[in-house]
Amino acid sequence: MFFIRNATVEDMPQVFKLIQELAIYEKEPEAVEVTIKDLEKDGFGEHPAFHCFVAEVNSKIEGIALIYNRYSTWKGKILHLEDLIVSQAVRGSGIGTALLDEVVKYAHSLGVKRINWEVLDWNESAIAFYEKKGANVMRDWDVVQLSEAGIKNYISSIQNSSNR
Image (tube, rainbow, N blue to C red; front, side, top):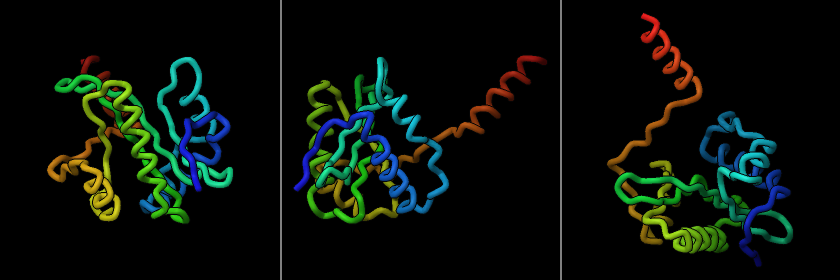
């Protein structure tokens, strides 16, 4: 038996463990730079950067859905699902569906026009799950990112070109 609820700042150590579990599953365990303190600071307070739902089983958090607001120049208000994570030990128990249901209800209550998220192209079980729920997995789009180091290099190139 599980229940879904809004995360609290006290949940962040368990949320962090699930983030680490996902990084290991996605074969990038050293890629996690965020800390528990970052999650506590960024997710709670006057201007939270994200909202998080947790799935609790016997007082242990076994799943999360971490979301935040975005804006589309074509659609207007949209919601981004950064991660939907269910602990390997309880996959198949309905927690993923319950978390996604909560995200969709929340998005509907906000009046957003779309929910966006990414999925790795090799994660066929996740792709099948999302498609079964009616999501459109857009395989012809590529994710584009500029890392922190890339941002610094970009700024340096801007500053160098303006100094000429």
